[in-house]
Length: 415
Picture 1 (cartoon, rainbow, N blue to C red):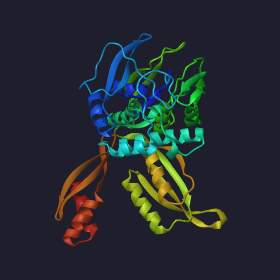
Picture 2: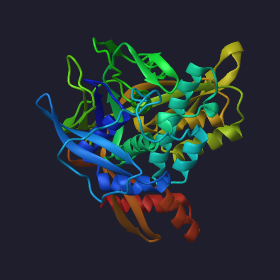
Picture 3: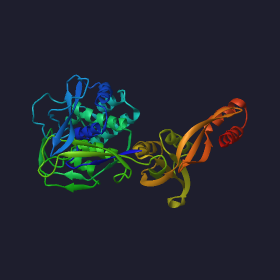
Picture 4: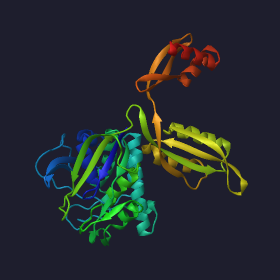
């Protein structure tokens, strides 16, 4: 499994996160091709190498209204923007940004030719951002109209970062403390304190450190991306594959304006692995609905999902739902549980598990071919399991018990 740790030395913004992922190897040309299907107008992504404080890194600029050049321009000097809902350069010139609502952005993402994982991740980021803005302004997420974050460059930053994560095969995210600057910044709503209210809302409950910087170090877009993605509590243990470095536009007093992304390979072939455990107690959902929910959880990527009888308040019998999942799937599975049953809360925690390396082989039986899963431990084949669906299909066709096909497949596999 690939995992990434974001080290916010100088902070985080949408363009810095995208730049760090491009520096890790996400292909700019493929990103442009995918994002063009959002139908938000022409744009180009310029990814350029730069040096700051003696360190090499990447700086990304999204050019609104520009046709793609067909390649990433490298070298020279870049002027990256700081995109967020409360932009520090809002008083500058240039054409006005469109004020897109959450429904507009959701529609654009759902209509684009993106992988389902990318769609889901990007929509969750915008929903988190809208919820924070709504809490700050005393309204609802659907009534929020993004200002700077509704602009083409910021949409590209957010959806592009989600697409880059998918292209790199990253399944888990850890983040360091959020650095906090102080002072004020001018935005579409006027002069506001730092950290921006929406940023403060999103990083509430996450580790943060104060700095002596009179600058906006973490933008709302950066906070939305990282707090939505975070799925593991600490820097992962494993093999460090690569480090991606990204620079922001402004110079800081006592630190480089740097975001590092450290890419790890964890849970290799066999041995230790990390998963998430989701739990909730249910006493007022019918068995039919619970059965359907278990089926849907499996189809949505749960590693396992099961019910355990429990005694609940007021001596009522109930069931405890337990779901095991990869960290990357937690948010989607929690959403499914909330929508499919009546629980008001879900417990979640990290759990370690030891897994076997596995491969598939095909064996011949009198009924046809059956795939067999082979488990390996320390280089030795120690267990075999015929695929149940193959056995059912062949048994139905031959009019024999499933057990007859299963046992013959297992005998063939053990020869």
